[in-house]
Length: 162
Image 1 (cartoon, helix red, strand yellow):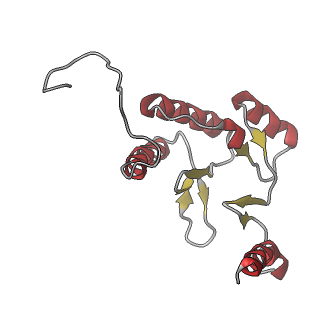
Image 2 (cartoon, helix red, strand yellow; image 1 turned 180 degrees about the vertical axis):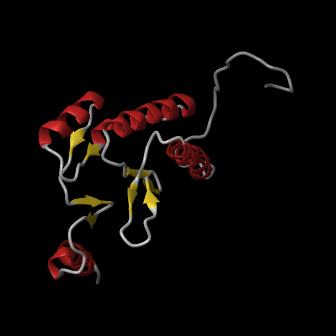
């Protein structure tokens, strides 16, 4: 709608550029749509997340800045429904997913099964336990060895300080 009247498509000649202070706010608004799509998909039993042990809270995705991790249940249809949902999101938002930075990680699944699913979408198969945003995900956080990579990273950074 332009001036209250429906119009056809138009191309913007100037828009928000990288570094524009409005850019993070717009990204947050748009990425919230992805979160809402995931919630609707869960309501309609198209996707189910993973459940926490104690409180049985269902978690389907976690977002931090421009990084998203999806945690979906162990049904092949959930994977394909997630891919359809991501296609819809990309088409409607104009955003693109960098598949070279994506990986599919399965817990207790064969590598041939994971390769078949990942290959159909064009992403890699990752290993479990894994790192997410530089921190270990999976494993036993009560074990001292679990925290060794985190401590090493902190020590390396502290050595650079003067």
